Length: 249
Image 1: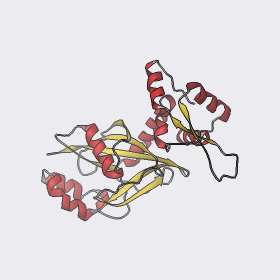
Image 2: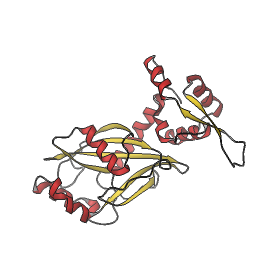
Image 3: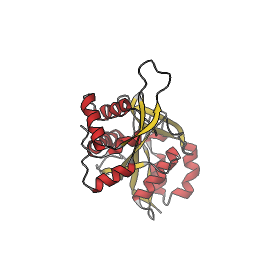
């Protein structure tokens, strides 16, 4: 049985040379209708799906979400949604908040629990959901028409991400396996929307001893080749137990 009034929505952030982006999708109406006999437990659920904005035209885009099955744990269901969107299992996933505005869904009462996930678009090949007719990354400053309050959920997710990167190294989930110090700084400047002093930023990183020299340098670049580094998760876990304050601002 599916819970009519409870859903989960996932904001999937990605970072590349164009900046911080969010992954959105448009649902294939025919594919959704074919799946309804297995998903729907009542006529009300069918009506909810049939009146969903992304099914009424080609203009609306949405986050990756769905009504929660009665027997499923929220976090596990969110992981399932993330896998359907990306084909990935080992992805950073964090709960944001519950969104329960009375009229967030105009034709019925639905409370959704929001999550955000972090991946690197260049590092992973995304798996398109069987229900999606289109899957696309969007710049956060150039979002398309979104259904319901998904714009609010994205803004809340960005606020949560900005809070997290100040004290925890979650931003490293947006980077590839090897990266330069310039790429790290660029990532944090984009997320926090502020310019950082390069000398002080690198000094703080060096003091925490969280980076490992990858043993390689950039190739075929016009400027001086920079070293590649990788994040040492074991060192971080140890320092966190010792009371590490990851204040990177």
